[in-house]
Length: 297
Image (cartoon, rainbow, N blue to C red):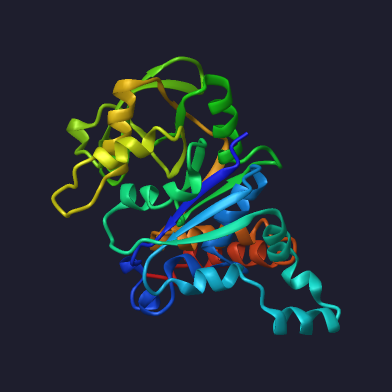
């Protein structure tokens, strides 16, 4: 089983300015919990025990969120309202949350490399801190599925999803050879290609399980035009040396780092919330009627 994970959460969140001037993007709320909480929750449900949060300057709110808040928790206990923090305390008791500072914004590859001192020689998962994956009907989540595939093939495996032509340039795209209905052998990756240059429509939505060999490739990867170390460049190098796989998954994915994706996540997760779903359904039906009547032009 994969027991360690890295969650890069050092981005500046410029797409959400001015909200993210003082609040980390990962701490923006989806229904009743910050984005980062859903990501950590996925890791814990997948059996991860050591979670490395890679943070930049001004991100201490994330670390504080997962830390003990004695005054608040004591007040809730005395008031008989411990259920309000039950999800958080459960996560905290099941996993070690370790904070590592990325001192310079040198890209996703560099952020992953910052976690090497904690990960060591173990295989590990990487979950992007603004991507929310929601498992369907109580089934295994994406990190669980990738961990199982890693165990089966004994090689690095990343999640892929089919995207529309107009969305190809937003993602890293995998060049793959199909091995089964859900598993592909990877030949390489192209970072945010033009449609004409894309080897497939299989995109990387931000979930990975790597062997520790990826660290050596990250150390040897040259920085790009913006001075950043691209994770996909290191993945390409590793794929040339050893077997590397990609897998589809059966969870709903929300890009909470995008404004529209963030709004969609709030709507869909509110429909999964027992306290809110009936009110939300009624509101959506009412809103649809108002749209048909031309209220929002």
